[in-house]
Image (tube, rainbow, N blue to C red; front, top):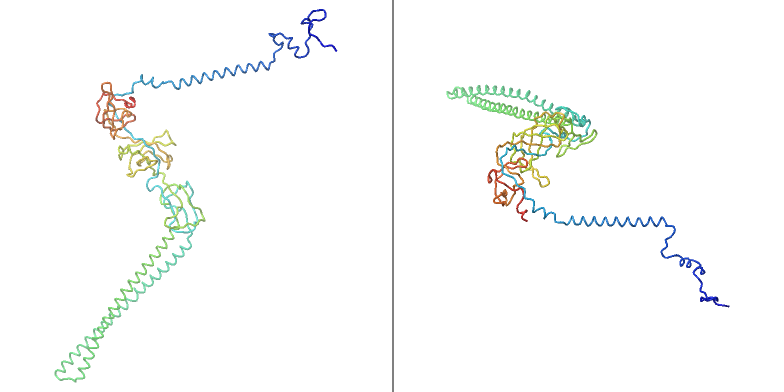
Length: 458
């Protein structure tokens, strides 16, 4: 075998690059020039490069935005502005006050205009003649309870009254006759006694002259004693008859009165079985149905609620700060959400002395009598926005309410003096919107600050 040699051939010449033919992939790679480009580029690779460039651009833009926002956020804008802005101030001037008090409230029935109608006795509801929204008149039947047992009781009490009347009639008929008979017996006894007394006196005189026998005197004396006793018995019989008549007559009258009272009570109980409307109005609610059995205990069960829609009022809840300005007779205006374009007028008629506390807010109930015709418009529980008109004051010193502060229980404003603001104690009066009256402590033309100088210094 002969091995291949890489040196010069037999002719002594080295092989040229063209004579050396590369084989396979390695040879092809060695044959390509270093700066040569591929003849055809892939579209997928080009699209991938464009996406990478776009993503890098968006990331740089987002980073620049975050840096700008951080610079704006942490830049000391406030400290730079405070040095240039002066505190707001106002002058003390004279104004005309037309003060009013604003409050919210609701439409409510007047006292006695809402009645809960119920039964005073127990029983089954036999008929119910009312429905919600029905108009009822005073005395109109609303419901009826079962009445059979009550009617039987009335009949029994009627019989007892008739028996008492018969007994009284018997007493009035018989006992006066007995009294008359006793009086006649007394007259007879009186006559017998008088005769016996005369005979006894005659026999006594005859005996003194010895003109008769002793036996005649004894008989006369005996008849006299018997007549005297008979007279006493007749008198007692008359007294007894009169006393008996008076006593039995009094008892008969008492029994008759008792029977009449029991009859009236039974009739009243029977009347309780018929429930009527106590006032004119509208049925607002029905609390029972026909066939139900109601039990009357300490509290009467409610059948229906009747409201007189012609007797309504407004209960306005005024804050404790403004209640001292409200007086009886003051004019008030209010509106309801159902008719926002219509204004109703009224007058203050009552101020409740006891406060109404809701969520730690102290209010007082001010009753307003409605003077504008409202039939068919207002209903109970409607929300109202109330304005109570107070007295007007003219040409009074006033400052903005923002300038007044409370310090140590006193009203204080800060007055401009020599480039500084000094505290000044004042006495305030009425408040009209953003303005407040100054009773003492300031003069017209002075300048007060609307901000707290102590906070500005800090």
